[in-house]
Length: 76
Image 1: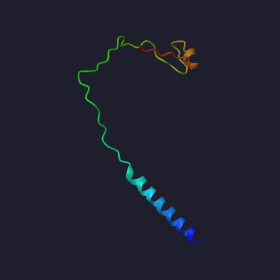
Image 2: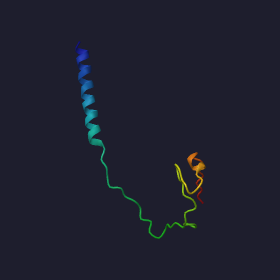
Image 3: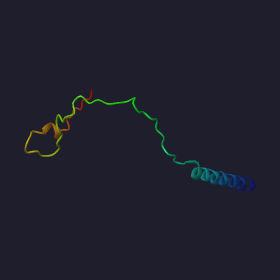
Image 4: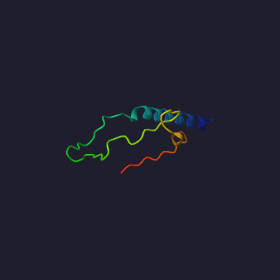
């Protein structure tokens, strides 16, 4: 009987300690990013729209492949 009471006491103290650590352990900080001035640039060779994906009914063009979700996106 006494052993069970000690175990319950230790278990409740451990649970209370774990709960206290849970609430006090995490904190969001301000994100810091490196400065990449002058070192990175992006060049897009073709800056025009090749094709517009249309789902549903379109009276101006045939979009059967769009509605079948046959899409091929290519990047260079």
